[in-house]
Length: 350
Image (cartoon, rainbow, N blue to C red; front, side, top):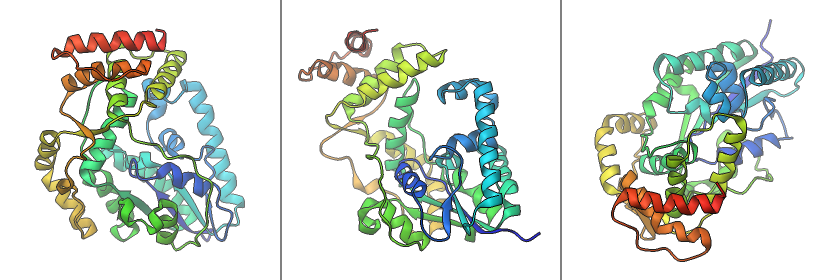
């Protein structure tokens, strides 16, 4: 039986490279030979986690996704039914999956290969070829952004490395290096300064505008430190209602404006030194320099050096919850933490 489709395009992120914007554009595609895969949500990460990953066996992950095991299984069955109908009936020549989870840095080795192989085995019978596309963030920009995202999601302060070979090495192995297309994410170099225009140009599509959501802005230093304080002092959610309260509280705190959040040179310098071989791997793979180590810390930013620093900054900025000016925080991090947590409890009515 001849394969029905010419190409499956798999857009895999990376994190904070305009993926949400691109997903809204893809969802609105009404032109030509290309269309989005119907996996219910605009962002295909949930479907991929349930279908090709092990999320169905991870209760904490399901809770964070707003599901229990039964509802997740029902959701996956609906996704698979929609995809099967589309594969049978679509008149398009190319289909697109967009899931930044597929390039997530938290799983690796055999786990990553298994996920990608299951995706490949599922769709290869229907497509002449499968091609991977990803925007690649420079290392310090990635770590700074990922640290903020992890502050939103969990307890603790982490400065994850981008782990480029871990993300893309298995893609090269399974799909062939010529089918894995990587481009540096640098807003100053995007076509028209716009990721939608740049992606359409990259794929050779006509330039079409789309209604897209407001960008997911980075956390300010006040927001990041107070979100850290919230997670550090409140127990992990054990129910969907508790998780909903957590999400709403974090979203409320995240609106705080103020100085930019940055990482200290000590933290980033150590990361670059420790991961020099991995940085060399991605630069060889892309045949260009991607390091942003020479850009330094923005003048209007507060450089965070660790958890004690976050506690002091939380106390410093806690008065902003009441519309007041920041204060000089206590030097003792635990005293600062107690002060900030008291302010947050009153603000969130805990």
